[in-house]
Amino acid sequence: MKQDRKTETASNSASPYTGGITIKSPKELEAMRRAGSVVGATLAILLKSVEPGLTTKDLDTIAYKEIVRHGAKPTFKGYRGFPASICTSVNEEIVHGIPGKRVLKEGDIIKMDVGATIDGFIGDAAISVAVGDVAEEAIELMDATRLSLEEGIKAAVPGNRIGDIGAAVQSYAEAKGYGVVREFVGHGVGRFLHEDPQVPNYGRPGLGPLLRPGMCIAIEPMLNLGDWHTRILDDQWTVVTADGKISSHFEHTIAITENGPEIMTVPG
Ligand code: MG
Image (cartoon, rainbow, N blue to C red; front, side):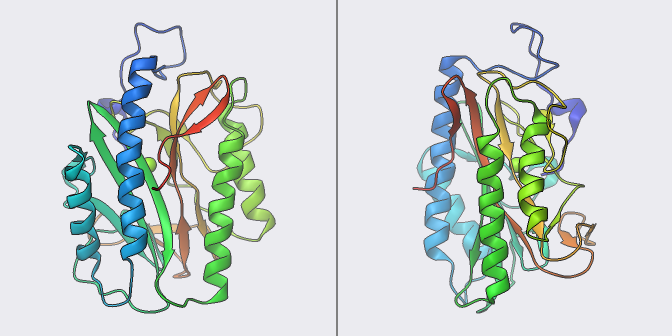
């Protein structure tokens, strides 16, 4: 989602200096887990629901019902004017697609990005899903994107820096020849959808903010079959590849802990 750093950066006065990054208390981490589990449950239902003939609006309705069934709110609805509960982005659309009348057809790939707020905290995650049978190159791109996210998550440990995460994602993705989107990045997450720090999917090891236990971040690689450049459609939301080739997106909200990264948005 679009970031508004002036209004979206949470204060952190009670914590040691972390460069503006919030450290969640054990109680706050419990709320983050609840929000993450709503997102995970919603993604699991969306994953099962995707089939040719459905509209992207149908998927939005399915997600809305699941989110509110858990007593949560769809975080994205109304965020900077976003008109739906989830983002649905098809084929060359990368992120921030608006659900509508578009009918899914065999061979498409769809990215679904879900945010849920409960007890004042937010979970944020995304998956890419094949619609029926899709081209081998689309399956390979989606697999690589999911695995690049896993590489980024492995690097999200105390003592590492934000640059270690980006470097892990980028080196995995570029070794396979994919374009790594630069203009949109992951982010801190908690009481606000977009908190510090920014979490790019590229970078240099050892650079950027230090990772400490209690930080929560959304890591979200966007990998393109072709070039990494993007543009935004006239709806002012939908981000597409500049070259029109397909793109894949996976995202998890994770917590940095003493015992390693904790994924808070596991589907299921
Ligand atoms: Mg996100």
